[in-house]
Image (cartoon, rainbow, N blue to C red; front, top):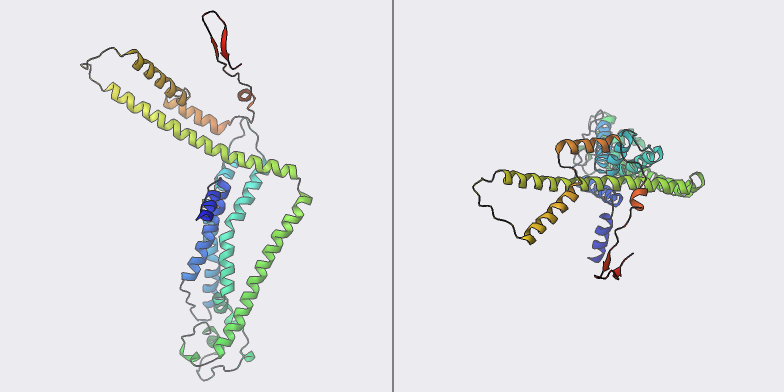
Length: 330
């Protein structure tokens, strides 16, 4: 249970971890779908390859676009690529990094599907059983009156009557399955070697400092977008609260008995209103909010927080009636 909590905390720690978790889930879903998929080869020479290629190619394409769709890097990359320059220049290296990260994660589930189908071998048998030389095996059913190519096309169909009590179909299936698994292991080995070589060779062709800068600013774009969305949600909630309260106050009848508020209630109300105004950041009209959002899109602020970093701090000093300092945090 503790390990499961640690895994969940890792996947919830940041957007990159969440994207990794979603891609892993898609990969597991692809395996589950294949194992529950009822594969029925048509066992016809003109349709076997077409059906097999459809099963081999179409689901990976679907999983690839699903991976692109659920990947947060996709939205961040498109926002950075399509936005106007404004006060902030674009960094092509960051867009390239986000695109690479998106493609790598989106390809996980399709590659898992392809490898699982190759390791299983059913699709390979359906597609290439007609290409096998029957002279390599004994027990060919030659008393069926069918053409040789039609007999070979029926190899994936173990329920067919022409292969009843025949070892020919099993021998051909094992032969083609061996080739299928060899191709699958070869692809897996190639991907592992390619990834290892990429990790080993990359430092020789890529400046480490530049790579750190690219990763930093790609993470910054992601965090900035999330913080802006969260701030907009908080502002919208406070704005809606103010609109609703104002509506009900406007609807009150003039016959309501108006009594002077006690001083402490007045102070509390003023403090609450000041806090509400601070959360609204001075934006109290629809036109102001539309203008602010338009400015954020067309002219994002430059990456310089010098004014905030050197903003003067409020200091508190307590003095007695004689002017002597009792406490000061200066």
